Image (cartoon, rainbow, N blue to C red; front, top):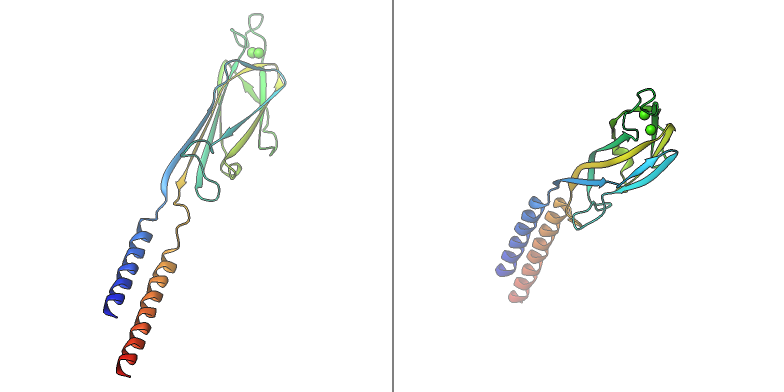
Length: 185
Ligand SMILES: [Ca+2]
Ligand SMILES: [Ca+2]
């Protein structure tokens, strides 16, 4: 009886230790789209994913706290918007995961457009469409940075683990009492 009780106490202690180490770890996922040479004169679409690789974002397990997207556009004319030498002013608007177009913004010689995208990243994917609302320009680079937490997969809740340990302890006590009663018979 005493041996079994000691085993159960050890089990409960191990359970508490396991729940103490079940913490979320800070994580950073980065996805870069760096096309060689793309000129946008109407519209262009591409996708970002943070699901790739061994340390990729795991759906339903990891969590996202914030996300930022930076898109680098460049005028395709060497002298920008200068009269005669350049090719005039360009404007652009963006669409993310089909959630509507941003208002048109001017494109200069080398522009970085930054966006916060927390609510658009629930599936670890981000579809980007860039539309030239006026003129044409180059897509130089797109960079997605996501900050979140990597969680341990399938970790039982600490309370349920502790209750499980207590349950085992109770079972052992009952079994011990039964054994004792039998000894007295
Ligand atoms: Ca221009
Ligand atoms: Ca141009």
